[in-house]
Image 1 (tube, one colour):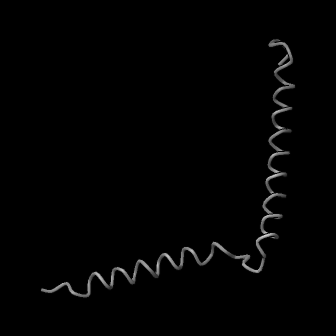
Image 2 (cartoon, helix red, strand yellow):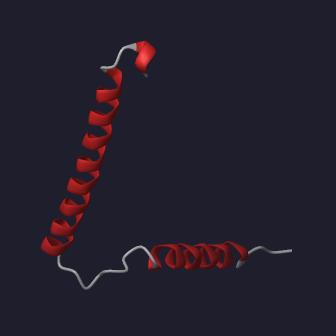
Image 3 (cartoon, helix red, strand yellow):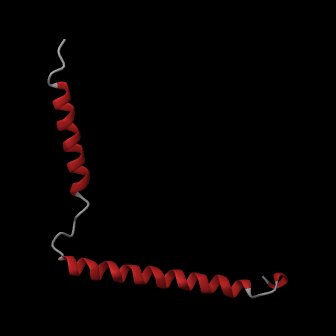
Length: 69
């Protein structure tokens, strides 16, 4: 029993699998690098704003005495 092409078939199968995985990752390839950077910065600003709001709400709750919480 020779296994001459078994390695090659496995390599092709893995290559196909990785291509399918990576196919969906770059859905917005039509965006330029600067547009993508702008979009990502807006998303990060929104996340930071939400995190700061949560922090301020938690800090406000911690200012109350324990018996009032």
